Amino acid sequence: MAVLDGHHDAGDETEPVGAALGKVVRALPTAVAEQVQAIRRTTAPAPDRGAARPDPATTIALVQASSQNRRVRLRYRSEAGTEWVTEADPWAVVVRHGRWYLLCRAGSERAVRAYRLDRMRDVEPLDEPFERPADLDPVAMLEQHLAVGWEYAVEVVVESSVDQVRPYLSPALGRLEAVDADHTRLTGTTGNPYWYAEQLAVIPAPFRVIGGVELRHTVAGLGRRLLDASPNSDSD
Image 1: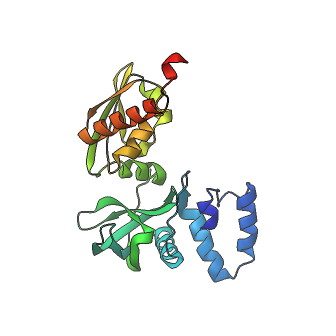
Image 2: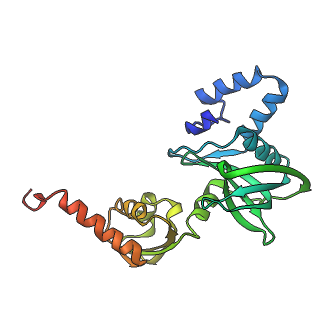
């Protein structure tokens, strides 16, 4: 877990950290080594930092269930404090911005979900098998999933092509689509308009917030703050 939190490729033994971890694993008792190897095979780290470590036993139980294609029953506590029990197909464990997520299909509606491991209170492996999508890209799907379902809707038009805009915006911000050859539409949702406005500020092209009153006000406020921070810019 420490290696993955440091954003190293734990499974690549051609790299220094992966090679060193491989030596450690080979020296471990078989039962422990199998658990570590399961984590190395099935976790998918994504770059950036943060801090919300889950319980190691919970992580191991989920990784083992994922590697064995076994459904799990888990008890989850939301950020608001609501708890519930659900059954899930544990497709993959993904590390993103220092937070550990279970990407899965869960509930009676069998919808795709992303549950934070540090909010899980109990995990019970079941005898029921499951099949994960053959073309599953855990990191990409998690990014897309985290871009929807938040409180505030967002629609932004950028005066640049999709290919020019894409390198500057995380998939977690929403979906990009071409309006025409010189304009791109970004649609998504956010629970933090100020953070979202900060991400938009890095775009090296003019843009307009055409949907989302909260984001529009936040962008305007951020723009005023930046102008106030450089009062002599007109004379420079």
